[in-house]
Image: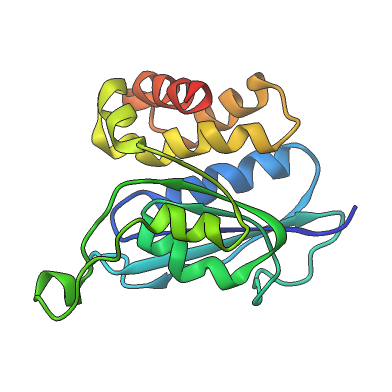
Length: 190
């Protein structure tokens, strides 16, 4: 099997680390060789954060180069736009439509770009954009955006639901497991 690459992009504090850990665990459990990169960015300060997940028969590097990602999982629209050059032709973007103002926007030096989802689609990219924050809140916690996104991402894999649930149980703390199960289901149904 050829190696597949996923970029998970977000803003510090959104749960991208948990998402990459869960996805890595799921793929390992399915018998793939998996490499998950370390975090790049200012994860503790609300800055841009990215992790790479690569899987296949044999994976030699965790790094994803320009034009190599099969999937871009984005927790925020501007992050989807920022990492778009890494998506290969025919790749897909699964993104939250939430907008989190970066520091240049907060300070008034710049404005947040309008209609980013449409601009991404105009580049010929398949984009699957939806409001994950509302679904996470419906599940019981705004912190569950990451799991809502993974629920939607599950449509891009041929794994049964039980496999995803097993990975959730292995990675998510028991005290918030039910909220995360609901968040996952809402993401699947979105």
